[in-house]
Image (cartoon, rainbow over all chains, first blue to last red; front, side, top):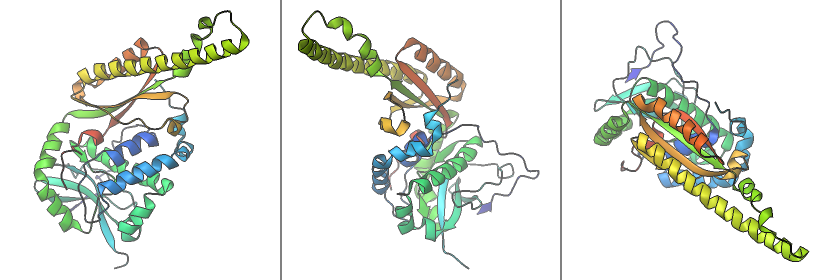
Length: 74
Length: 259
């Protein structure tokens, strides 16, 4: 096991400046990504169920996420 | 020791330059660390079982505010790792009891991770959504179709004309979306059309006709973005929205990896 230590002089994280709409994000982290079953057996199907039940809940998503409302276009 | 911990997986990568990797915190604001096995590196964090154990997780995933915070924190870690080299993102809520189980999983899935890492090397995921407003397209063509008839008949004709104009506009928008996806697929290495999220999700009256995601060679990223702009111009009535760069969530081999 290797701890990730801070880089010597606090170099800023090379994080891209992407502004992510929640809808696009959930689409990817809940429906994409590699699926391996961990010890905690929340099965893929469960997460899919969460995803589906979310869609009924979802009107409140846009309220949480102003980015989806006023997406800047270049 | 206080609270019990479980191990949350963010991503799997290889030969991460640990010395250059910035101090990073994860979904529980825990320091992110590396577990190695099978020539692979799993980027993980130890998180409290009280919040991220099985029962808690099931409950918390239904809490939209919790889900949003967790999804953003998970994605932030995956994004940083992705800047350091080929990365396979794990789906949200992949949790192990301890590091030994993580190592065992890396060993068990080494072939699949190898394949996935090779697939995404030198490539980036981009999203393109297409919005159409068939309603406004349809309204233009209605009046001229209603001739000199009685008021009731005119109403019915107008109603029928509006409906058929709407249908025509919708199928035209769908055909445009298809052509746009085809054009983008020719630049991408792999392309997928995802299910369309509900329109209410977006506070937009426009209808989503395309929810595409594309794995693109990095050398062709500019060409891809230019093509999106050109297609946007060439298809009045369809507004294209490019998102990314994304870690390769949609192309990391979800379909291939067995439990």
